[in-house]
Image (cartoon, rainbow, N blue to C red; front, side, top):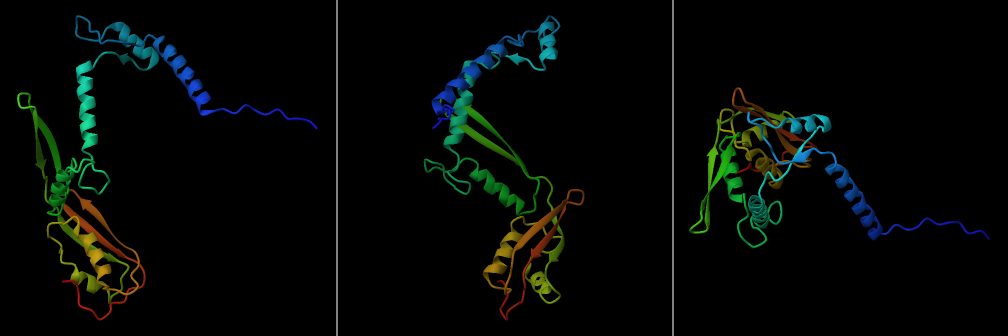
Length: 234
């Protein structure tokens, strides 16, 4: 009976050791390129010639010691504060310490503005440090932008009997400020109230016209729709 040679088993420790050696070798070769160092400017205020030559030779140049230790520590602390204040899940209102999560208040304000037709809302946050009190005041400036109105309402997937039912129940009319969340809430209500039998998938699509400041809305219905003898949405 013959014995076949077996290949040695590579363990996680062997792999880590090999990768560490590979990284050290790469760092040694990278430092040998001669394309790194502090920022040096000539008398004319421009980068020294040897820095530019190294850049054009290698395609990049690494500036060292550009950010000081104190600034790095401050940046790391800011990141830690943001992570500590982040919501514990995508829909959560609180962080891991039970406090209101960072950004939730801003998100609610932006959602409210979108429901008033301000589709291009932007904001800028600024902070004021009080070293004596060891406090930070955060100010958020909102720029709502132009107000958008509902343009066309397009209904897909309904017949001549069921489409008028939807158009009558849909309270948002062309020319009204476009309420961003209304369409999806309306479709959910249609399903929950049983307005149609055998209702399949529903979804909404929008097409924004920045020149006219309008939003064309499409409501899409699938499946067989038969309106039962029920009252409409309140």
